[in-house]
Image (cartoon, rainbow, N blue to C red):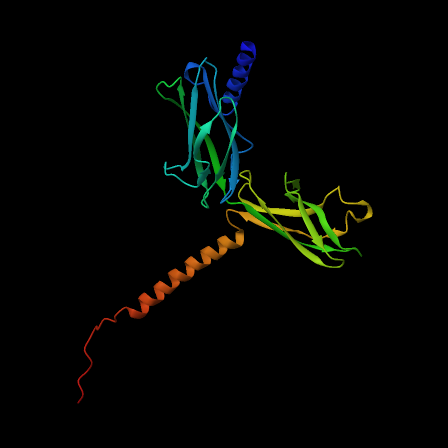
Length: 262
Protein backbone atom coordinates (compact mmCIF):
# COMPACT_ATOMS: atom_id res chain seq x y z
CA UNK A 1 0.00 0.00 0.00
CA UNK A 2 2.81 2.39 0.91
CA UNK A 3 4.58 1.58 -2.37
CA UNK A 4 1.38 2.29 -4.33
CA UNK A 5 1.01 5.70 -2.67
CA UNK A 6 4.64 6.54 -3.47
CA UNK A 7 4.16 5.68 -7.15
CA UNK A 8 0.96 7.78 -7.30
CA UNK A 9 2.80 10.73 -5.80
CA UNK A 10 5.52 10.44 -8.46
CA UNK A 11 2.88 10.44 -11.23
CA UNK A 12 1.25 13.55 -9.82
CA UNK A 13 4.59 15.31 -9.54
CA UNK A 14 5.27 14.60 -13.22
CA UNK A 15 1.81 15.89 -14.11
CA UNK A 16 2.48 19.07 -12.15
CA UNK A 17 5.63 19.72 -14.14
CA UNK A 18 3.73 19.31 -17.41
CA UNK A 19 0.96 21.67 -16.28
CA UNK A 20 3.31 24.41 -15.18
CA UNK A 21 3.05 23.46 -11.49
CA UNK A 22 5.48 21.92 -9.08
CA UNK A 23 5.21 19.81 -5.93
CA UNK A 24 4.07 21.84 -2.93
CA UNK A 25 5.65 21.87 0.50
CA UNK A 26 5.44 18.85 2.83
CA UNK A 27 4.68 16.37 0.08
CA UNK A 28 1.67 18.17 -1.42
CA UNK A 29 1.12 18.29 -5.18
CA UNK A 30 -1.38 20.52 -7.01
CA UNK A 31 -2.03 20.58 -10.75
CA UNK A 32 -4.20 22.16 -13.43
CA UNK A 33 -4.64 20.19 -16.66
CA UNK A 34 -6.67 20.79 -19.81
CA UNK A 35 -6.76 20.15 -23.55
CA UNK A 36 -5.95 23.68 -24.70
CA UNK A 37 -5.47 27.27 -23.55
CA UNK A 38 -6.63 28.92 -26.81
CA UNK A 39 -10.30 29.88 -27.09
CA UNK A 40 -12.55 32.21 -29.08
CA UNK A 41 -14.17 35.26 -27.53
CA UNK A 42 -17.14 34.40 -25.27
CA UNK A 43 -16.11 30.73 -25.51
CA UNK A 44 -15.44 28.26 -22.74
CA UNK A 45 -12.72 25.83 -21.69
CA UNK A 46 -12.71 22.75 -19.49
CA UNK A 47 -9.92 22.15 -16.98
CA UNK A 48 -9.25 19.54 -14.35
CA UNK A 49 -7.65 20.28 -10.98
CA UNK A 50 -6.20 17.84 -8.48
CA UNK A 51 -4.55 18.05 -5.08
CA UNK A 52 -2.61 15.19 -3.51
CA UNK A 53 -1.03 15.02 -0.07
CA UNK A 54 1.49 12.21 0.27
CA UNK A 55 2.22 12.73 3.98
CA UNK A 56 0.48 10.53 6.54
CA UNK A 57 -2.60 12.03 8.17
CA UNK A 58 -5.70 11.14 10.15
CA UNK A 59 -7.87 13.93 8.72
CA UNK A 60 -7.34 16.11 5.67
CA UNK A 61 -9.44 19.10 4.59
CA UNK A 62 -8.73 20.53 1.12
CA UNK A 63 -10.56 23.51 -0.40
CA UNK A 64 -9.94 25.58 -3.51
CA UNK A 65 -10.88 28.93 -5.04
CA UNK A 66 -10.54 29.80 -8.73
CA UNK A 67 -10.62 33.09 -10.64
CA UNK A 68 -9.87 34.32 -14.16
CA UNK A 69 -8.08 37.66 -14.46
CA UNK A 70 -7.06 39.83 -17.41
CA UNK A 71 -3.56 41.20 -18.04
CA UNK A 72 -4.29 44.11 -15.67
CA UNK A 73 -5.08 41.70 -12.84
CA UNK A 74 -8.83 42.47 -12.92
CA UNK A 75 -11.28 39.61 -12.48
CA UNK A 76 -12.87 38.72 -15.84
CA UNK A 77 -15.17 36.05 -17.16
CA UNK A 78 -16.47 33.31 -14.89
CA UNK A 79 -15.19 30.07 -13.40
CA UNK A 80 -17.61 27.36 -12.31
CA UNK A 81 -17.38 26.23 -9.65
CA UNK A 82 -15.34 29.15 -8.32
CA UNK A 83 -14.71 27.38 -5.01
CA UNK A 84 -15.31 24.06 -3.31
CA UNK A 85 -13.81 21.08 -1.53
CA UNK A 86 -11.55 18.38 -2.93
CA UNK A 87 -10.89 14.76 -2.05
CA UNK A 88 -7.26 13.78 -1.84
CA UNK A 89 -5.99 12.64 -5.23
CA UNK A 90 -9.39 12.98 -6.96
CA UNK A 91 -9.87 15.24 -10.01
CA UNK A 92 -12.49 17.98 -10.15
CA UNK A 93 -13.64 19.85 -13.26
CA UNK A 94 -13.70 23.60 -13.84
CA UNK A 95 -15.58 25.36 -16.64
CA UNK A 96 -13.98 28.69 -17.60
CA UNK A 97 -16.15 31.07 -19.63
CA UNK A 98 -14.02 33.85 -21.12
CA UNK A 99 -15.05 37.46 -21.92
CA UNK A 100 -15.99 38.84 -25.34
CA UNK A 101 -12.72 40.79 -25.45
CA UNK A 102 -9.61 39.19 -27.00
CA UNK A 103 -6.45 39.22 -24.93
CA UNK A 104 -4.25 37.36 -22.46
CA UNK A 105 -5.86 36.02 -19.29
CA UNK A 106 -4.72 33.94 -16.34
CA UNK A 107 -6.65 31.24 -14.51
CA UNK A 108 -5.49 31.14 -10.88
CA UNK A 109 -6.44 28.28 -8.56
CA UNK A 110 -5.56 28.54 -4.87
CA UNK A 111 -5.55 25.28 -2.90
CA UNK A 112 -5.78 25.28 0.90
CA UNK A 113 -5.19 22.22 3.09
CA UNK A 114 -5.48 21.45 6.80
CA UNK A 115 -3.83 18.29 8.11
CA UNK A 116 -5.26 16.84 11.33
CA UNK A 117 -6.98 20.13 12.13
CA UNK A 118 -3.76 22.13 12.06
CA UNK A 119 -3.07 25.52 10.47
CA UNK A 120 -4.04 25.96 6.83
CA UNK A 121 -1.34 26.04 4.15
CA UNK A 122 -1.95 27.27 0.62
CA UNK A 123 -0.61 26.32 -2.79
CA UNK A 124 -1.27 28.39 -5.93
CA UNK A 125 -1.29 27.24 -9.54
CA UNK A 126 -1.85 29.31 -12.70
CA UNK A 127 -2.81 28.56 -16.30
CA UNK A 128 -2.38 31.06 -19.16
CA UNK A 129 -5.48 31.50 -21.36
CA UNK A 130 -5.39 33.22 -24.75
CA UNK A 131 -8.67 34.63 -26.09
CA UNK A 132 -8.84 35.48 -29.82
CA UNK A 133 -11.42 36.71 -32.30
CA UNK A 134 -12.30 33.68 -34.45
CA UNK A 135 -11.91 33.74 -38.23
CA UNK A 136 -15.45 33.13 -39.47
CA UNK A 137 -15.39 31.01 -42.65
CA UNK A 138 -18.69 30.94 -44.55
CA UNK A 139 -19.44 29.18 -47.83
CA UNK A 140 -22.48 28.37 -49.96
CA UNK A 141 -22.61 24.76 -51.21
CA UNK A 142 -24.74 23.32 -54.02
CA UNK A 143 -26.20 19.80 -54.03
CA UNK A 144 -25.77 18.60 -57.62
CA UNK A 145 -27.28 15.15 -57.05
CA UNK A 146 -30.80 13.78 -57.39
CA UNK A 147 -31.05 12.91 -53.70
CA UNK A 148 -31.46 14.95 -50.53
CA UNK A 149 -28.52 15.03 -48.13
CA UNK A 150 -28.38 15.27 -44.37
CA UNK A 151 -25.20 15.18 -42.30
CA UNK A 152 -22.96 15.46 -45.36
CA UNK A 153 -19.40 15.87 -44.01
CA UNK A 154 -17.28 18.72 -45.34
CA UNK A 155 -13.95 20.17 -44.24
CA UNK A 156 -12.42 23.63 -44.53
CA UNK A 157 -9.02 24.16 -46.12
CA UNK A 158 -7.15 27.46 -45.73
CA UNK A 159 -4.33 28.30 -48.14
CA UNK A 160 -4.49 24.72 -49.37
CA UNK A 161 -4.09 23.12 -45.93
CA UNK A 162 -6.70 21.23 -43.93
CA UNK A 163 -7.96 23.05 -40.85
CA UNK A 164 -7.81 20.45 -38.10
CA UNK A 165 -11.14 19.92 -36.37
CA UNK A 166 -13.10 21.80 -39.08
CA UNK A 167 -15.47 18.95 -39.90
CA UNK A 168 -18.94 20.42 -40.51
CA UNK A 169 -22.16 18.56 -41.32
CA UNK A 170 -24.24 20.02 -44.16
CA UNK A 171 -27.80 19.29 -45.29
CA UNK A 172 -29.28 20.20 -48.71
CA UNK A 173 -32.16 19.02 -50.85
CA UNK A 174 -31.57 17.79 -54.39
CA UNK A 175 -30.60 20.71 -56.61
CA UNK A 176 -30.63 23.04 -53.63
CA UNK A 177 -28.05 25.07 -51.76
CA UNK A 178 -26.95 25.37 -48.19
CA UNK A 179 -24.64 27.62 -46.18
CA UNK A 180 -21.96 26.25 -43.88
CA UNK A 181 -20.01 28.27 -41.32
CA UNK A 182 -16.99 27.46 -39.20
CA UNK A 183 -15.43 29.60 -36.46
CA UNK A 184 -11.69 29.03 -36.75
CA UNK A 185 -9.74 29.76 -33.58
CA UNK A 186 -6.11 30.36 -34.50
CA UNK A 187 -3.10 32.54 -33.80
CA UNK A 188 -0.95 31.24 -36.64
CA UNK A 189 -2.14 33.38 -39.57
CA UNK A 190 0.08 36.05 -41.08
CA UNK A 191 -1.25 39.45 -42.11
CA UNK A 192 -2.58 39.72 -45.65
CA UNK A 193 -4.84 37.82 -48.03
CA UNK A 194 -5.82 34.18 -47.46
CA UNK A 195 -8.06 31.82 -49.41
CA UNK A 196 -10.24 28.95 -48.26
CA UNK A 197 -12.17 26.08 -49.82
CA UNK A 198 -14.76 23.59 -48.57
CA UNK A 199 -13.94 19.96 -49.49
CA UNK A 200 -16.21 16.91 -49.22
CA UNK A 201 -15.06 14.36 -46.66
CA UNK A 202 -13.84 10.91 -47.64
CA UNK A 203 -16.38 9.34 -45.27
CA UNK A 204 -19.31 10.33 -47.50
CA UNK A 205 -20.95 7.40 -49.26
CA UNK A 206 -19.79 5.99 -52.59
CA UNK A 207 -20.69 7.78 -55.82
CA UNK A 208 -22.21 10.71 -53.96
CA UNK A 209 -18.95 11.73 -52.30
CA UNK A 210 -18.29 14.68 -54.61
CA UNK A 211 -21.79 15.91 -55.46
CA UNK A 212 -21.42 18.97 -53.24
CA UNK A 213 -19.74 21.77 -55.17
CA UNK A 214 -18.83 25.39 -54.63
CA UNK A 215 -17.75 26.79 -51.35
CA UNK A 216 -14.74 29.01 -50.98
CA UNK A 217 -13.55 32.54 -50.82
CA UNK A 218 -10.97 34.82 -49.33
CA UNK A 219 -10.41 36.84 -46.21
CA UNK A 220 -7.84 39.28 -44.93
CA UNK A 221 -5.90 39.40 -41.70
CA UNK A 222 -4.98 42.94 -40.72
CA UNK A 223 -6.41 44.83 -43.69
CA UNK A 224 -7.06 44.30 -47.38
CA UNK A 225 -5.34 46.30 -50.12
CA UNK A 226 -8.69 47.90 -50.96
CA UNK A 227 -9.19 48.80 -47.32
CA UNK A 228 -5.90 50.68 -47.24
CA UNK A 229 -6.77 52.55 -50.44
CA UNK A 230 -10.14 53.52 -48.98
CA UNK A 231 -8.50 54.79 -45.79
CA UNK A 232 -6.00 56.91 -47.74
CA UNK A 233 -8.78 58.26 -49.97
CA UNK A 234 -10.86 59.22 -46.95
CA UNK A 235 -7.90 61.06 -45.40
CA UNK A 236 -7.30 62.91 -48.68
CA UNK A 237 -10.95 64.00 -48.94
CA UNK A 238 -10.96 65.25 -45.35
CA UNK A 239 -7.80 67.31 -45.92
CA UNK A 240 -9.23 68.69 -49.18
CA UNK A 241 -12.51 69.67 -47.48
CA UNK A 242 -10.66 71.47 -44.67
CA UNK A 243 -8.53 73.35 -47.22
CA UNK A 244 -11.58 74.45 -49.23
CA UNK A 245 -13.36 75.69 -46.10
CA UNK A 246 -10.26 77.65 -45.09
CA UNK A 247 -9.92 79.29 -48.51
CA UNK A 248 -13.64 80.13 -48.73
CA UNK A 249 -13.80 81.73 -45.29
CA UNK A 250 -10.45 83.56 -45.47
CA UNK A 251 -11.11 87.39 -45.44
CA UNK A 252 -9.97 89.40 -48.48
CA UNK A 253 -7.60 92.22 -47.59
CA UNK A 254 -8.49 95.76 -48.75
CA UNK A 255 -5.38 97.10 -50.45
CA UNK A 256 -6.92 100.45 -51.42
CA UNK A 257 -9.97 102.59 -51.13
CA UNK A 258 -12.39 102.87 -54.07
CA UNK A 259 -12.29 106.05 -56.04
CA UNK A 260 -14.73 108.73 -54.90
CA UNK A 261 -17.70 109.39 -57.15
CA UNK A 262 -17.63 112.68 -59.05
